[in-house]
Structure formats: C-alpha cells, structure tokens
Length: 138
Image (cartoon, rainbow, N blue to C red; front, top):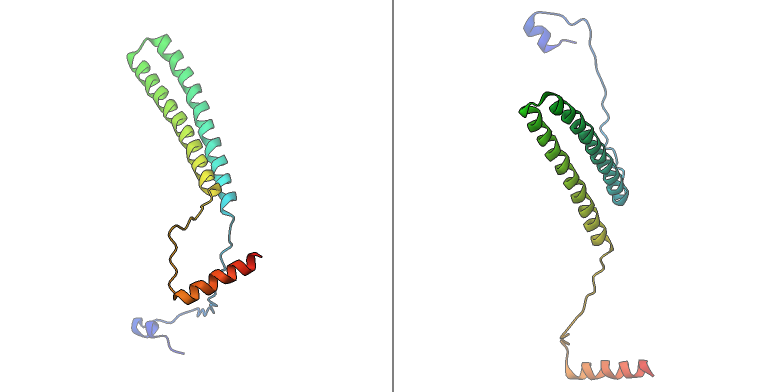
C-alpha cells in the first residue's frame, strides 16, 4: 500500500498504525441534585471557616510585627487582613442565606385556585351535568 504523504515527501514510513475506533456515547449518570447541593454547601462552608481561621492567625502575627516595629505599613496590612477576614465572614452568611432560599423553594408547594370557570356547552348539556352531579351526591 502506498501512502500519499510518503509519496509526496519521497519517504517511506517505518510503522503503519491503524486504529479502530468504536464511537459510542457514555450514558450520563443522573445525580441527585439535593445531594450535590449539600456536598457543595458543606465544602464551601468548610473552606470559608478555614479561611477565617487563617485570617485570624495572620492578623495576630501581623499585629505582633506591627507592635514590635511600630511601622505604619504593618498596621495598614493588618487593616487589610482584618477587612478580608470580615468579607469572608459575610460570604459565610451569604452562603447560609442562599442555602436557606434553595431549601425554601424545594419545600414550597403551589396551590392552584380556579376562579370564574366557564362552561362552553349548551344549556341542555349543563343541565345534564348538574343532574348527574346531584345523582352522584346522593
């Protein structure tokens, strides 16, 4: 068998690989959405707690440096770390709020009330239905 690329380049291929490919689609695994939400919530919550703790440790270290050096820059950095830690605490509260909203939408039931129902039939058909209703009630 002649390879057109080898012919045009005046070379010969040492190896000839032919690979069969069977195309099939993987069936996606349906995951329980509630379980995924709970796992994501727990992971996010743990990460935020970890960041808050590290921020507090960092703030304590920077305050020691600022106290010993008296440098205004050290106090500025301490203020930035304090602000970052407070922002993370706000994100933790936002996470709680979002999870609460998700749970409320899951548990919310809708009550459909039909007002002013219209019968689109003849008078004779309406009387027949009413009569059947009275007969069924007895």
